[in-house]
Structures are given as structure tokens and as C-alpha cells.
Image 1 (cartoon, helix red, strand yellow):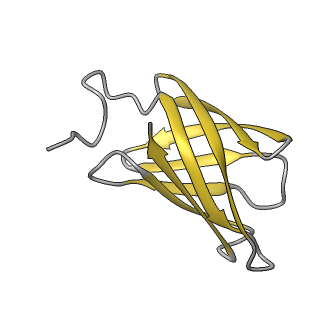
Image 2: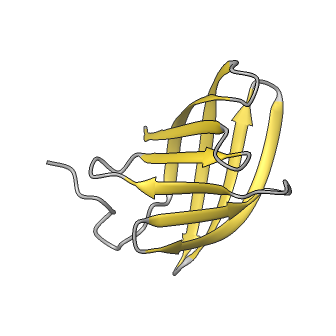
Length: 98
């Protein structure tokens, strides 16, 4: 059974992205996560768009400021995937480890 976090407690890695935006459109892509202690850096590649964000991890909750009014808030799941919302909970984002 996969661990929630890597052996070193990190969520760093490459993830497949699937989500639904505020308009209900489905999107997919790739995200790269770098972590230094409780600080995280995200790079999402959705189509030709590249979005960067930075934030923190506190237990199983990851909060990422990506330049929008509301952050992306993820919960680290038991299989190490990240399930999140953005746009104040109106849009969904799921990251699955590759």
C-alpha cells in the first residue's frame, strides 16, 4: 500500500493533472512539485499554458498561491494524490503521482 508521503515526508514529484474549471470545462496536464521543508513550489502545464505557484504544506493540507484571488487548496490523500479546489471552491483539481 502506498504511503501518504514519500519516506522523507515530501510530496515532491511529477503528477498527472485532471480538473474542472468554473465554467465546467474539463482539463488535463502535468504538474511538477518541488518541496523544501514545509514550503512548496508548483508548476502546472495545462495545454500550452504554464502556471506557477508557491505555498506551504501543513499536515495533509497544501495551500498554493498562484496569483489568483483564491489559492488552490489540496488535501494529500492516502494514495499520495492531491485533491483540491480553486476559485473559492468552485473549480476542482486532482493531481495523481506519475
